[in-house]
Image 1 (cartoon, rainbow, N blue to C red):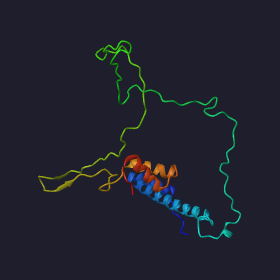
Image 2 (cartoon, rainbow, N blue to C red):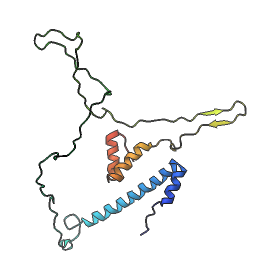
Image 3 (tube, one colour):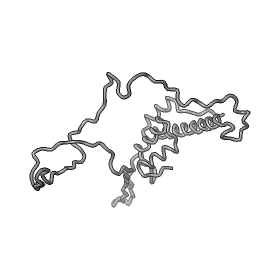
Image 4 (tube, rainbow, N blue to C red):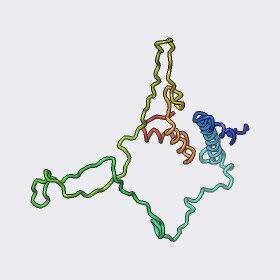
Length: 205
């Protein structure tokens, strides 16, 4: 089996000095390594879990395998919920909400008089923290100018930002999010693509 080559500390230091594109190149290499290891691990897990019930293997090959217990957890004796001394976390109101919705008083609840034209003496505030109604990828289109010099006739083209190398591509932030799901949370590449499509309505290869 050919050993997997990982970048050395010296290679990482050199890439850091060479700039963002060199770092992204090593990032792509590491993603490939992780995907390869994940595939090999899954193949070994599938092979390990095969027995006479889910494959063509004979029952004699099952050996002394027994089904795992449903749960190995034991009662701790503690009450459910936060424990004494645990510092709670709550939403703190913000001074400038993104949107304000005014719930108006239109009629008197006792006599039915019209009150919509009156100014309110005060308001009671509540805040709801939620995601936008539509979360989608933003598309930025860098446009490189092309100008012809009127003196010498030379055609001059502006340079795109160094991270823009393809006609269409994913930006560094969504790439970082996909790597975060896949590498940090151990979500498979296929399921990571499904998550991105579900969240942003963007099919991912």
